[in-house]
Image (cartoon, rainbow, N blue to C red):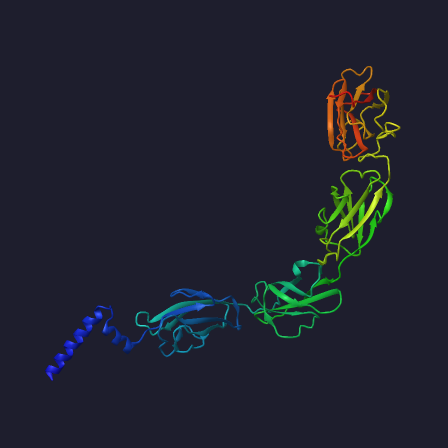
Length: 496
């Protein structure tokens, strides 16, 4: 027998030495086969981990009203977790706090829930200790604390409001987002709500939320829709119903009238352009990117003004004489519900030929404003005459100096190097006179200023035969009774 025992010991030692080379302990294998892997304990409240020794607080709760908090025990180990003790969850104070018992055995990767109920009977603060017997040798128990305050009975209902689509006035879809805001003051707190399309509030209560997405409104034709809601607090008090109203509009807008009308002729050059729609429009959708005025293919500058339900385009400068313009209002234009024009809306009109150019500021100018010469041609070489005078100070509006005259002239295609001179007559020594030459859009081409005269050599660089230009004679100071004259000559042979 002794020989057999000795032989067994020798064989065991050989096996132990052999396994040591592979970092495996037969004793460990034997121990694990007897004891098995062990579990690990973790406690959570919703998504938050509860730490050993921490405190969980219940909301203030009216007396004789219960409030629950659910906890989850998770086994994060690789073996079973077996809770021990007569009560797996032991609360030191009974009566005010109570609990449901979880299952005592929790398999690896699994979890069990238990609930602690707070039921205050007096207007005081309660606290208690909670101990969970984990059954783990190295961590036999887990302790945390709970507390809560009893308050007066809540007999006051909550109040609240509802909004549809963040306060919008119109919608083009019957699936909407709702926003709620409810308040219970010092009461038990808002916990539930009901939503209804007809104010009947049929159906079950749902948990209170400040947002409810994709609420289906009452189907049917375009028109007003109403959504109702009411709230309930933890004490069971219900609010009265509140509502919000919105207009359902699924139809696209359309233009009903324009000014000038389509194909209209002899339109005044100082005209603004109007379009009227069949409903109120979104002011932010109509701008110079969606409401455009064209001369040929060139978009004209201007300002958009909204006069519900009409829009007005104010050109930045006067329209050209005898010219056809096109107005385009594109599908970027939307009504208040967000419906776009179904297609671009466009029309054309033509301005009056040789319509006298009226000033953009007021009517404080001479009757021959912009009409200095009978023929409006640079064809009368060497002719000189008096055509105006600088009056006493009379402010003419924003953008104008004290004294200035404007003239509209026509340059024939043969006059490529006109020479224009503007000068004061006798008695005007020391007076400051300036002159500018501008194209048809009032863009300065040339300018000059001197004490006694302004003299400009000017090449208009005609883009097509026959162009209109403007001459501006002005002074930064007022000189009563000063007169000036304009001299022009065809300088095709003069050079510069």
